[in-house]
Amino acid sequence: MFADMRDASGTVLNEMAHHFGPWVRRMLAESRYAGWITSDGERPVASAGLLILDWAPHFLDPACDRRGYILNIFVEPDYRRRGLAAALTKECMAEAKRRGIGVIALHASKKGQPVYEKLGFKSSNEMLYIEPASD
Amino acid sequence: MFADMRDASGTVLNEMAHHFGPWVRRMLAESRYAGWITSDGERPVASAGLLILDWAPHFLDPACDRRGYILNIFVEPDYRRRGLAAALTKECMAEAKRRGIGVIALHASKKGQPVYEKLGFKSSNEMLYIEPASD
Image (cartoon, rainbow over all chains, first blue to last red; front, top):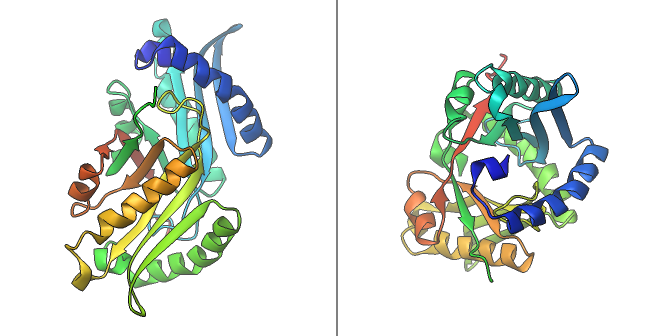
């Protein structure tokens, strides 16, 4: 997915992958991550994940101390434009609702934005600070 | 802070406050929240909080499984335009750095946006879904 986005070097992606495995196993064990894979026969062709964040009770969802975060939405190039990303996003949204979570965040690529807009997502006022790499 | 923003009704704010207290005590006990209060003599006049989120290792910070989230930045009206919000934000950023966290998020009001921009924050591509209230 990230290689497809071409936003990071191979070295950085390898380092990320090395840390992602143990992290996602811990989150799955603690019921704080749910993942979906769409298959065509034996071949996995699309994926999505929902991370459950501890979040400050907020007026948008005043009795809830969690927020959903959708990540790792990816569809293999030759399976795009068939609604797979939207279907997987709906699975994530349904799982968040089952867990009593009323607010879900994600970071959208330019291509993904219209898909999420149709499902009711709106651009937020989030700002990010990214510490410059030290090397 | 939220009453000042006039974004939510008193009932919703009361419900939020009721849930925020136990939540923040739990997060403090788990070293996942740090809070600052600026005082003028005995009087608290400004505040800020840093929440430590479990986050998927990402190419922006490939060896880190946490992300910082700055919240509850508030300055009493007659103490504004003196740099208190910027000073508190810098405290949060320094604390995140001490904890080895390279990415920090926040949600900025229109008034806050230029303050955070000066400190290196940039608008993100986050989108939010907010479940419609059921009542």
